Image 1: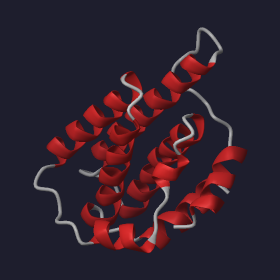
Image 2: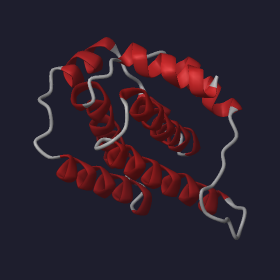
Image 3: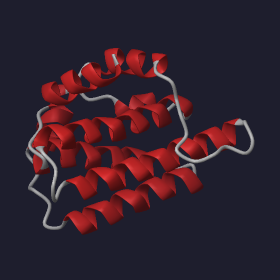
Length: 153
């Protein structure tokens, strides 16, 4: 994926909160992005039962958008980089035995990332999320990138 292009698009897109923001400060903005990520991830998982592939891909990209914003706000962009080796590693993984367990692990890692300022947990959640898209949902990186650019570009 062309992360630099996707990050440029992300930076030019408005960052809206799903929940009301009572104070405008960096801590609240970061909490808002994590909340958006959590809700979008939940929505992605809920769509797996009934929605079309295109609808799921759109929702997956909405969740991806939140991951990118966290990388930007926390200066963790280097953890989001995807090279050919990582692509190959992710695509060689097995499909998940349980969407429920995957979802819970993702939420656990994201919570750890937020509450403990844990960059490694964020990176782990990112890799699980990429695996969800590329292995379990059978999207390829080019498809995800093209759809992201279509939605936000």
